[in-house]
Each structure stands twice: as structure tokens, then as C-alpha cells.
Image 1 (cartoon, rainbow, N blue to C red):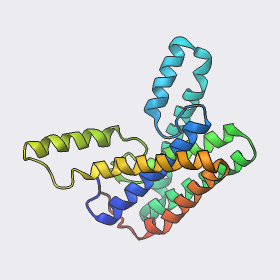
Image 2 (cartoon, one colour):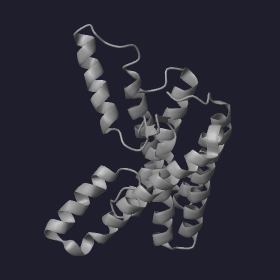
Image 3 (cartoon, one colour):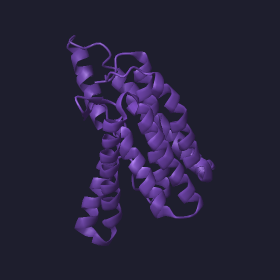
Amino acid sequence: MLPRDRARRRFAIALAALAGFVDAVGFLSAGGYFLSFMSGNTTRLAVSLAVDPAHALLPALLIAGFVLGVAGGALLSLRAGRRRRAVLLLAVTLLLALAALARMAATPGPMLLATVLAMGAINNMFQRDGEVSIGLTYMTGALVKLGQGLAQRIARQARPGWWNWALLWAGLMAGAVSGAFAQDRVPAACLWIATAWALALVPVALVLPADEG
């Protein structure tokens, strides 16, 4: 569930917006593949395996990189203790900076690897009982919860705050619009913008409550 306190809820929305920004940049600069939305890459992998196996390698590598990013972020969280959010964000910032440098050097492979690792790692930001409680880079679950909340609202059984899932989705959407705009207008600066965005959230992470929502 989404955090009940306003500060962590805003933090989650800002992180979802960052993921949307990076995913839009990746989608436009990596031939229509995703850097944070692995359901889309899974569909592309399946279609390629069925009709064009020669193009199956890239989505397979992106999915593998995302899983490694999640695993690496989870291990980092276990070792970082109470400041794990800030430590995770610093790791994401470093990976995005490496991706930006790789883009400047015209090396798309390292750029995609660093970025997809960052997007995997960021999903460890909100946990409950050692498991991810809020997926920041994919919104299917959020939209399902929004639809369920709408049904409960119609039935007059709605739980407080059910509409906050719409805000999380809107955050990712707004970030994606911003990323597409930046990729179209200032492509060389896109990943540096994402890097600065992640770094700016580090102080916020330091002052948030340590307990999970």
C-alpha cells in the first residue's frame, strides 16, 4: 500500500516520475525498448522469439539487467540499515551518471546497462517484511488498485486514500512526458537531468521516517 504520511507519499510519486522520465528517454533512444517497464520488454522478447529470433537478445539482456539491479539494490538495502533509502539513491545517482557519461562517449551498451541497473535498484525503496511494497517503475498494479478502489467507492466501501494510486500513476506519466520532451529538445542532457533529479532526492530520503509504509 502507499504510505499514509504525506512526505513519503510525495517521495514515492517523485521517484515514480524519475522512473517515467528515464523510461521515456530509453524508449526513444533505444529503439522502442524499455529501461524500467519489463512487462513491455517481455512482450517484445516473446514476439521476437516467435517471429524474429535475431532481435530477441536485447530485450532478454534488458530483463536480465533489471533483475540484477533489483537484486543488487536488495543486497545494498540489507547492508545499509536505517539509511538504506539514501544509500540506494546514491547508488542510483552513480549509475545514472555512468549512463550519462557512456552516452557522451557514444557507447550505447554501457549506457543501457547502467540505466537498467538503476531502474531495477530503485524498486527497493519501499519495502514491507523484506519485500517490495510499492513498485515504482511499473503501474499495472497501481491501476488495478485504483480500479478496485473505484469499485469500493461505488459500493460505499472505499478505504481512505484509495485515489492516491492515481497520483502515483500520474507521477510516472508526468515524468515520462518530461523525459520525452527532454529527449526531443536536449538529448545530450537527458541523463544528466535524471542524475541531478536522483541526487536532489537524497536529502529527502535522509529525513524520512525509517519505518516502511
